[in-house]
Amino acid sequence: MSEDWLTGPVLEQLNSGVLVVDEHLQLVYLNSFLQRHSSVQLSEVKGKSLFQVFTDVPEAWLRRKFASVLELQSPSFSSWEQRQYIIKLPHLRPVTSSSQYMAQNCTMLPLKDPAGRRYVCLLIEDATDAFVYQQHLQTTLEKLELSNRIDGLTQALNRRYWEEQLKLEVQRSQRYQQPLSLLLFDLDKFKQLNDQYGHLGGDSVLIELTARVRALLRDTDWFGRYGGEEFGVVLTNTALAGAIEVAERICLAVNSTAVTFHEQSIATSVSIGVAQLDAEGDRAHEVLIGQADIALYNAKREGRNRVVSFSEGETEFLLKAN
Amino acid sequence: MSTVFSEEQRDCLQELINVAMGLASDKLARFLNTFVHLQVPAIELVSSAQIPAQFEARYSNTEAALVSQGFLGNDGLRGEAIVLYQLDNAHRIAALLGYDTDSASELEMLTDISSILTTTFLNGLADQIDNALSYSAPRVLSSRQTNVSQALQETAFHWELALKVDISYQLIDHSFNCDMLLLIPGEAVSNIQHILDRILEEY
Image (cartoon, rainbow over all chains, first blue to last red; front, side):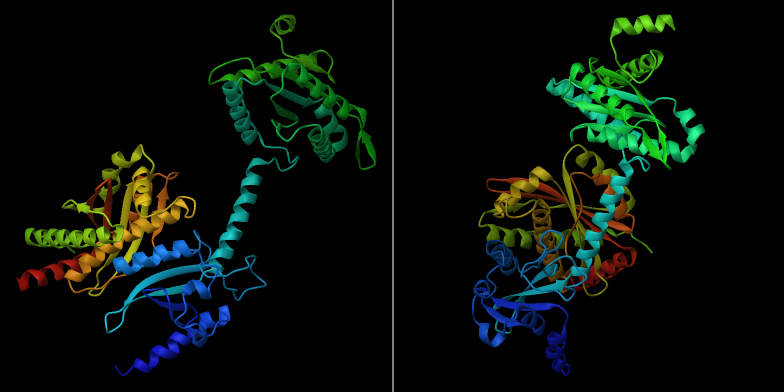
């Protein structure tokens, strides 16, 4: 063929790695791309075992791959998504990429020379770009997922996500027979506060309130914004007495220090309803919310800035009085 | 464009596939050092729109995997091969291929197995019609978490015709079943028909 002269230069200038080994996995050929990236000279390594030259390749795995190519005379593949690289090589984007080594898409092809001897050709394509984009995508998705869970103003969990977690914790508590308590609390006279200091004033109180409450909670508790000025805390592995204690601390933390807004001091307080999980079945989380809500209602009725826990008798009494 | 095969064309295709399966099982047996028995595969030509429904029942209540690999040959022969199998089956053949699940991820194992099954079979098919195929890297379309029939629907949408090949591999100590689907676009269907006609003329 008159175009034979082409193959050499093209192979040498190809922006992919080409490596050929014989049946015994001894190196027969490396193109310039691979020689430059790995700082290896073909003349020095020709005839040596692949694993002797590239000592950090996954040997057992690669042997199996090459065996299947030789035996079945069909190609085999490896993707950077499953195995980031086969041969550790530097890539050409040392500044813009967070990864240290070239991500590689590899193809292993069966070859035969005119005499019928069998070889395997390993093609290595640089997939670093795809790898980098994939990582960006991953971080973006993680951020998106976070913003999907968080209430933008207060950074507490949003209602939807918080309720999902409550549901899961209720199931977990039922399964493992551990106590679970719920606090529902409401900023007292929030409407009045908004009228007096404006909505920005109201917002800053909500933000400060959230920060103070969070400081009192454990990592395993779920703190969410339930409505406008209403919040919920799921206290895992906590019985009623412990929950009341946490609620008292929240009450005190909010009421003891006024919130400063535009050099004004805004005194605030919260009313808290507490309930411990008692109900069974699929709707147990709804029952629990209902009970904490009744307790919260009673805390408001009894004069605000206080903690009231749900108990059957007392509730009936107060509801009757209403 | 007609995607209907004549009876002669169908018989011819079935024969080619039978031989290809034979070649594949021979190669696999040597590779795995065990006796491989491949049943005569049942083939069926269906419009690709019907495909998802056909597999829905078989793969809906089980953990299934779906791996795709594109192929391209001379004379306009091209398409996408899809291997479907139940994951517990996949673990059986993985053990046979010498994988321990620590060193290779499940996805890697799945693509390897599928690639071996697809390329040995299609190479056998190509050999008989004096063709040669090149392949794209295998890609997992769905495993475990995603719905198989939905993934199929999204893929099959692009293709006119599907050649459904039921494959059942039986090894001495193990047996497993999988389905292979060859999805073929419209113009490649008529190219295949030309190829079949040419073979029929020669005999």
